[in-house]
Structures are given as C-alpha cells and as structure tokens.
Length: 336
Image 1 (cartoon, rainbow, N blue to C red):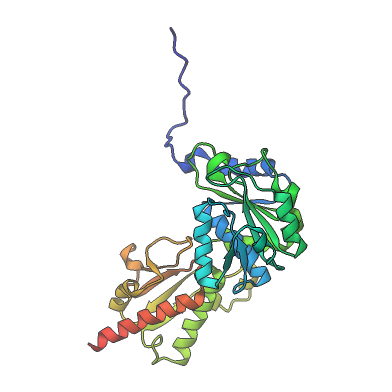
Image 2 (cartoon, rainbow, N blue to C red):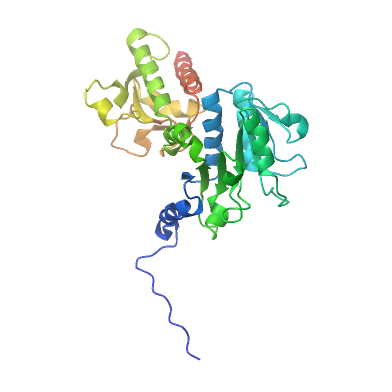
C-alpha cells in the first residue's frame, strides 16, 4: 500500500510561535469573528482582564467606591478574573458583590457588572439581556467573559454588552500553542474608550510614569545635591529631558518607558538592583513589571555606573518610594 507523500515544510523550520504565524492569522480572523466591534488582542488573557479593569475604572474614577458583582453566586468563575479583582481590591479598595438581586439593587452609575457566560467550570448560561437592562438602567456597564462560547455560538453585543472578553488561547486558537486574550468593544463606546486603552495597555509600560520618575530624579539632582538622591545619582537621561523642538512632534504619545541613570559610584550601581523591592533585576523590558538592570552585567563594554530602567504598570509614586529606599540603603551601608 503506497503511503501519502509527506508535506514539505520550508527550511529552516522550527515549530514555535513566531514560525506558526499565529498572531498574523489571528489579526485576520478577529474582524470576521467580531465584525464592526473593534477587537483588540493581547499576549495573554490576564492582560485584557487588566486592560478591562483600567479601561472602566479610570474614566469614571471609581478607584475607591467601585462595585463589581461577581459571576459565581452559585460558585465557579474564572480564577484569573478573581485574581485581578483581588489585586484591584488591595490597590484601590474595589468592592466586590455577589451576582444576586440584593447586590443588583445596589448598582450605581459607573459601576461594572461583569458576567461570565457560560460559567466556568459548570457551563451554565446567564441571561445577558436581563443584566444589560439592570446595568444600563442606572448607568452601569455590562462586561462579558464569553470564553466558553465565542462567535458564532453567541454575540453578547446583540444583548447589550459594552465589552466582551475572550481567551484567544482556547477556541480562537484551537491548538493550545498561542497565548492570547481578546477584548471587543461595542461601537457605541469605541470612540471614547479605544484610544485610551491602546495608549495604556497595547504599549506595555508607562511612558507617563517614566517621565514622572525622570523629572523627580532630575529635580533632586539639581535642587538637592546633598540629599538622598543627589548624593548617589550623578545624572538621569531620557527623551523627556531633551529640549529639541522636533521631539514633541515626533513622539506625541509620550517619550517611552525606558531611561538610564548614572550613579556616582560604580560599586553602588552594581549593588542597587539587589536593594529593590518592586523593581526586578533583569535585562529584559516591555513587560508589566518594572525592571532595573546594571547594564554592565549583560554588556561588558557599557559604563559600569549605568543602570537601565524599564517602567511597567506600577504606580510611579510606588516606584519612586522603592528607588528612595534603595538609595538610602546604599548610603547607610557606606556609614558602617
């Protein structure tokens, strides 16, 4: 019995994410799955979950009094979503309620009603039209996790959803070889929400936070040279400090989340990363976590006094406090 000819793959070929072209194919498929509904993708489902929280919490300023009814009055629901909620509860005092009538009666304008349907792990469905009516009646938003039933099984926008979340890793991808999350935005909300979401989350790392940190360090060096910062740091370099007229036209969205600081002592530069509590000592950049690197560790030809800093999603004030405590530890060690 003759065997079928073996398909020849282009050489060289390695089965890995870049060579499978998953991202390119996904970008073509998403508009077909969610026509006219502005889908955005991220490299994991947690990223759209965090994007969803930022997108809704920031415009309506619910940092202290948000109510988020949970989708598991009878148990269940994605543990990843609950993980994000727990983080926001610690950071912002977010209040989470059950998905029952008593909690729905407490909904107020700007609150987020998040429904997972079908529900994980039971596969039970929830009545989206009902929840949309309850949410919109008081000016709240309905967000839906539709991972268990992507199009064409259901289209939550037809029943009043403001945002729909999917896991592209699951049924969209189908082969468990892609990390991806998807947020689709209702067209009625797109003009107001999409640009802010793109600026905040599609470019991981906060350019605004980096600029704030740089200005703080630069001010300390100039105005308080004998202080905690000025006595340790020689200079800070970032595009935001450049005075060139063309710069704002070339970078209208911000000056980037990466900058460099030079310490006065090379040994201090080598030791500072180990003193950090929020910053991680790593040579990478572009992730959600803030990184600080003694650059000579990966580039032996680099100035031994140079530290490269990549800002993630943490609040810049917290990163400022982390740098301060690191500088203080260096100064205290020198006194011994």
